[in-house]
Length: 245
Image (cartoon, rainbow, N blue to C red; front, side, top):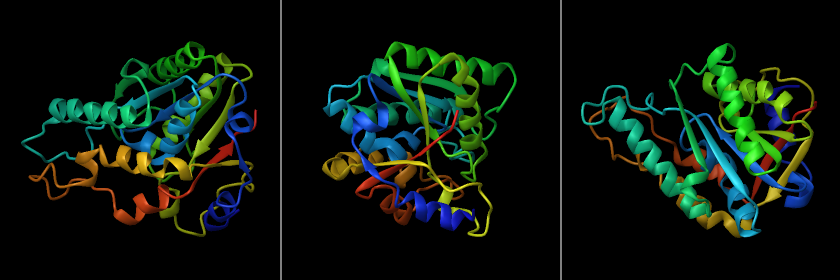
């Protein structure tokens, strides 16, 4: 199926509530970079916390690839900043800081296999066990970013350690794919109505100041989220593509 048709179909997946999406228990969100959790799953996290569900977040990369030419924010300082932004963002969504794990793998070089990927998979499995997860959410395997693909692969490695746990993928960068890109069969899965949480999701996204503003002003090549992308991802529903066992 073409990417444009796949994503249009994802926009029309059936709406469901948390019980239908997650089943019993908590949930784990796996984010390749600090900010992916808010962009792709901010409404889900807020809804789950409002319902009293346990939520864990695993952030895979250190986020140091967003501003590689900044003298004011060299890698270690940038990592510290992005982790602090993440903690502020998830606090807005109702999460506790102790429920966030930063794996600090190298941004743009997250491995899909090998010892580091296996260790990351074990971290995801531990997070799932800690919250008795009914589901794990990770970025779409066809997102056109190497770390997003790697994060999906890591969750694939973790699956054998999480029997019975549902796996879903959420697109973040998928809409930037060439529309004719082949991405496999039509999507199966569900959408979650997050309209009651759009304001808190937008606030969580805005907490990632280094990614949405001119906070880091000395790197003209630095990354910045486009308003159109934020608007697309902060709509009234979030899309979750089910990964078959």
